[in-house]
Length: 211
Image (tube, rainbow, N blue to C red):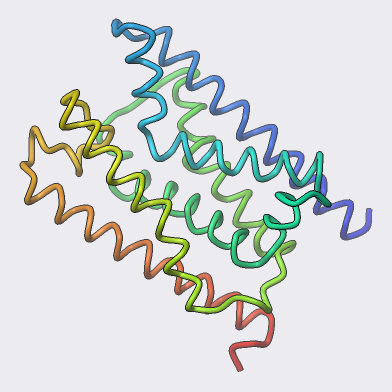
């Protein structure tokens, strides 16, 4: 099996795992909720984990179906590919360092949690290491990468102010108040910044651009 075939199969596996985990999580959420369907759907898409796993699934699906199209060409560029790697790495780190100890899921929910927060992040990091060209990575690109988490943060605070629902305890204004929730968000933004810089530094080192 040559290198290109290995990379393609890795993309196939990531796409299958990510779509499976997201769809199963949606099914379990609807199965176990007492909220109306519309509210349940809004809450489902309020989770950064869900949105980012969908982003990874779409990324890999596009590369499989239309790698030569406009979107596929964009995704293959070092900057967008590395941004996705940063986003999904944050999913894994925040869950495993902050959220894992807050509950103890079992059965299918345990499987979904592990796939969303461990399996997909590790698989995509592996893809980034072996398949993404890194010679074009520049630190000035970080500002554009921060748009997605910034827009997400604004949306969950606006949605929370209207509904009282916040997807994560560290941004729960009801429990923490705005000052603490916003401070936590700033700390998390710093984490995105540092992780982005770390990926760029590693990419430049691996490509020889950091010499």
